[in-house]
Image: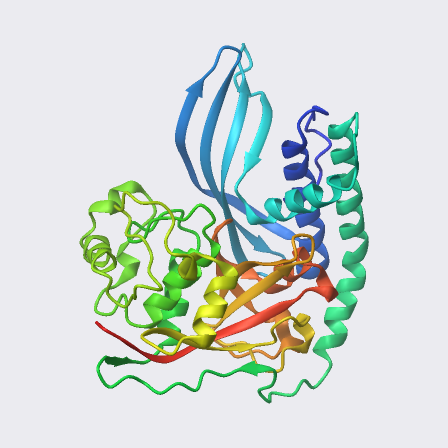
Length: 391
């Protein structure tokens, strides 16, 4: 990540997953150099081996890795992801012969490859075609970076209006038979910032695709889900399962506190799978929150189906941002704004977000925008507001 040099890594032509990860690290390094003057220091914060499986010829290891780094602008950030690593058996027990990850950054590329490969009929050399697509995709991304940086600098010089426009407004009145609950954006933001780089928080159960599941947890905290407890008591490793704060909040989730039958997550101990789609699906969360007339989260939606530069309301802490993937033609990813200052879209390079899959607590928004197309990136904003809950 510091140098962007992947020449020392030997790559088998039969393993496109490893190749994507390496090309992505090279691209990240270039992006950081152009947008943030590069990385001057990096360290490993977490290295947690979750599973080891020995096979006849190799060993499969599932490991969670989180690294923190400092840009040359003296800004801090971090990145965490779950990796499945295949090790070669033999005298050299450090030989990596294959790697895959759950990172959303990598999944975007895989979905792009899948879309492009579907148009290649009866390909004899399918893997070689995949590698060519990967090379072409990252080559174009790298070539665009100087131009995208110039567009970002030009946008920063503009006086962007702060008026609220292109908004989906929910005008339903609050129920008199339920508890009136305000949305405290700072509580939502703190939950995202604190748990952004936690693979597990021992309160909620991770979803198979965790980004919107995590965003909904942040909203839950904004509606008082963690009220009365200090979540900074909960650290990274599994010993915090027995932490009193984690136990109390886990019980709240199990008892559906600040949740509804249409919007709920799974507590960490739940034997069931993913939560209801309104809680963990990008599109469903938006549709539900902007149209809900009963108990549960309500929100105003801005900039739907428009490029990010059209956003006319300043981004605030506790806002949920969602991103569109043109290759899958779906709203694809949710994050929470964790900067405490309001920023107009012309100041988006100052905005930091937290997310899961991969895990970030302070990710530069400009980096995420580049992953979703740069100047063509569609980004919409979901702003939760006061509502009612049964409890």
